[in-house]
Amino acid sequence: MKRMLGFILFWIAVGMIIMFFLTNGILAVCLILICLFLGYHLFCC
Image (cartoon, rainbow, N blue to C red; front, side, top):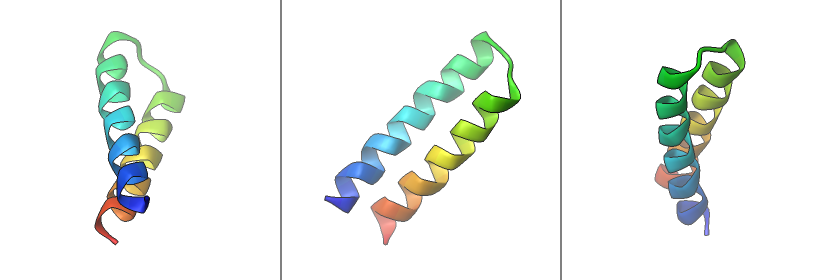
């Protein structure tokens, strides 16, 4: 289950990276970093 949640959060972060190139915002960067970190941690640990 943790691996699946990590995979989902990783792809949410990828979508947010695409959104970042369309609109700028510090909140977007924070959400991207949080999702990438949580996704990596849940998927690999």
